[in-house]
Amino acid sequence: MKSITEIKDLKGKRALVRVDWSVPINSGEVSNDYQIIKSFPTIEYLQKAGAKVVLISHGEKDDDSLEPIYKYVKKFLPQLTFIKPSDLVLLENLRQNKGEKENSEQFAKELASLGDIFVNDAFPVSHRKHASIVGVPKFLPSFAGIQLNLEIEALSKAFYPKRPFFFILGGAKFDTKLPLLKKFIHIADSIFVGGALAHNFFVVLGRDIGDSLVSGGDFGLRELLNTGKIILPEDTIVEDKKIMDAGPVTMENLKSKIASSNLVLWNGPLGTYERGYRVATLELARIIADSGKESIIGGGDTLSAVNELNLFDKFSFVSTGGGAMLDFLATGTLPGIEALK
Image 1 (spheres, rainbow, N blue to C red):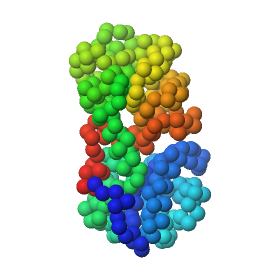
Image 2: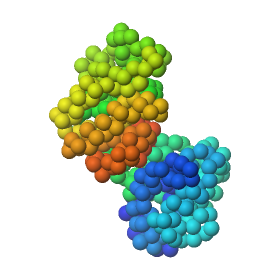
Image 3: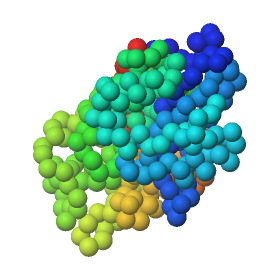
């Protein structure tokens, strides 16, 4: 996989750049611009090298227009145009064309015709086999953007970690996170499992979880527990017979564990974040930020917590990816990365 920094002559060339600007918009305003800002180094590098830049992205919803994103980004990149051809242009939401998600070869060719080279700087969507991710590289010389390279470099540290290495995994989708648990049980020194993921372990241990969310299936959790590496919440916040968040004793234990670690990897909330149970997740963000330990974090709700607290610069690395981060950690690669090789 080649980086854009390896291209010898970019002057006058059209660079088709896949970014991920599918950021949340509330009342017409961008509420979290982290993914957008992280794409700027690649754009600026290409511009300084004399390239003409064509930006392509999807939106939060398939039928969304990217015009609100364009208006927001134009404050940072005044020369940016929307759809109208220029030396720096943003095109409309890729997913308005069904060929994007279907990985249509015809759509990939249409996109490829817009550039002389292709640059993938959209790590958060590089786990998707979509036309703009895996299709276009078949038709153009293709390179990794600066942020994509940073993601690979930072996340790969978890494969050969500093020790003690503490992995914190939260959230609710057990099927997407089980591969991580099974892989990192052999790598991490200890793994804290929080959020709804912990409920399945509680069931195996015979604990009463009331009406709490639980995933169907066995998952071989007894084997994971027998390693002695799995740490579960000591206490929980319960409402209407449902476990909604981690409790204060759990948070004190986490603080102590983080203090004695040299690398902390965190993905996923500790409570039902979307329903307002955010206390433990926000507290965990503060604890890791204040610890001074090397830290790698990511995931949608995780980023929301860090954004709310304005703590982005307090972590060693904050991934722009959610599902892509999980898949990369589980497999060591992504379809979008393989397409660039």
